[in-house]
Image 1 (cartoon, one colour):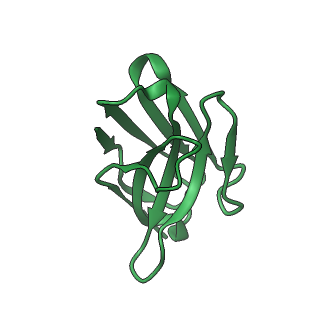
Image 2: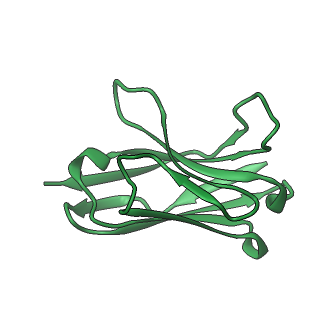
Image 3: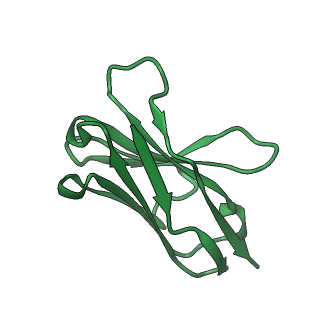
Length: 117
């Protein structure tokens, strides 16, 4: 299984970025997909999750600014990030997990997002 994340970079506060995660080696449509983020000194936190049925949930800190979506035909999940803030600076990780799994699932390599003030 591989999860290849891309789209990170440096952006000014108020700007936008779109992260992509391309999955291979798994039945993508059977997996809930999520984006997590982690900055130095903090635990990895859930940013957004999209279920197999397309329903999505978001962390309170990003509601109204971030949008998660998936394209099962392309085995890909996306995170559109608008109105970015410096506190959004982190490494963003793509995650794939079956809903009934206890374990954390599969992880991508992470992509750095840096928001300057």
